[in-house]
Image (cartoon, rainbow, N blue to C red; front, side, top):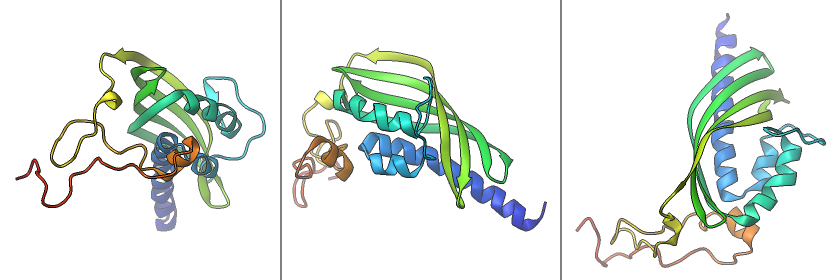
Length: 189
């Protein structure tokens, strides 16, 4: 393998891993434009548990309307390049989800197919496989505002800090009142 091929292999694996992180942040911030940028175009949805861009467009907005905050934590990510423009991968994900008034934890395995289009790696499709889902007893977003750094517990300003989140839910102004200001008490003092 030439040095150029080695570099392409390393860079490809890096770009593919970034897709999983970008998917998680776009999902959690409700950024449909970003999701559309990281998938190969598709007109026909796939049968669940597989999904492609057509599924994303047709199902995520309805899900987001009933879901509260979500946090997808990408953990292990194995990438197998099959040729210069195709790859497969396995992404482990721990999800924290506010769904229908319940705080849910899920362990997910995404089995992905990737394609390089015009020099850019994209998801061709993802397969969403569930290890488990469990309802947790406490809902962290039901807490009062944290007032960081004066206090270390409470609700933070995310996800409302995300401009895409505010746009999706029609929230005009960024959140306020979550942080103490200089000269006010701090947990560091």
